Length: 182
Ligand SMILES: CC(C)(COP(=O)(O)OP(=O)(O)OC[C@H]1O[C@@H](n2cnc3c(N)ncnc32)[C@H](O)[C@@H]1OP(=O)(O)O)[C@@H](O)C(=O)NCCC(=O)NCCS
Image (cartoon, rainbow, N blue to C red; front, side):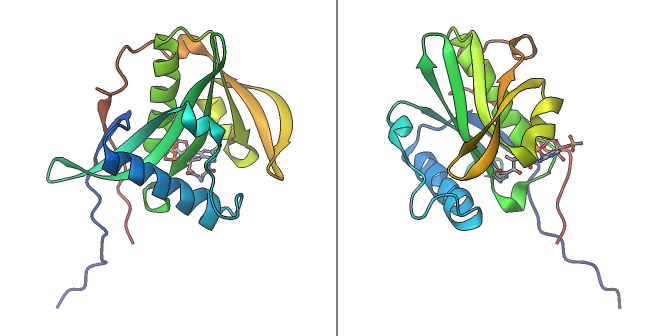
């Protein structure tokens, strides 16, 4: 008799695109609540704020039998001043972290979308533990700031690394190079 270690099956195909369908928007809200309220405890009840009224939500969507299935990652972007854009609320579901792609692909969609809409500077307040990830993705640290009682680094993306894209709703498919076992 042979015993094999159980493997959680995660399809390696993901869709990275702007969230538009009601189920995608609900998935984005649920994931943000799971990460920023329940996991990190940064907000007591709800992480939504006024920026949600103007921001564009982006999503990483898992697939099942080649169809879009669940929102497993998100970030939002908005223009905070003429030609200056900001990304915020970047989150990947715990089950899908460090697969080697989703956070990085969401950042790419965020900056390339803003670049395609006339952005000259793209900024984000990055939680300190994630600064190495952003540095690898060609972001430069500017200054430390405390937000919601948590230390962040204000960082700016190197736009030359992020070519403009015209249609974030078309998005793209990403293949995760790693599978997670349990
Ligand atoms: C931060 C976060 C979005 C990263 O998403 P992710 O999907 O795990 O990141 P990726 O797999 O795309 O990372 C790309 C690469 O950077 C590495 N990486 C990821 N997070 C890292 C970190 N905090 N420090 C250093 N390297 C990191 C990954 O291992 C991967 O390396 P590889 O290419 O050698 O495999 C995710 O950890 C998360 O949701 N955290 C909780 C929410 C949070 O902190 N949000 C605030 C963001 S400022």
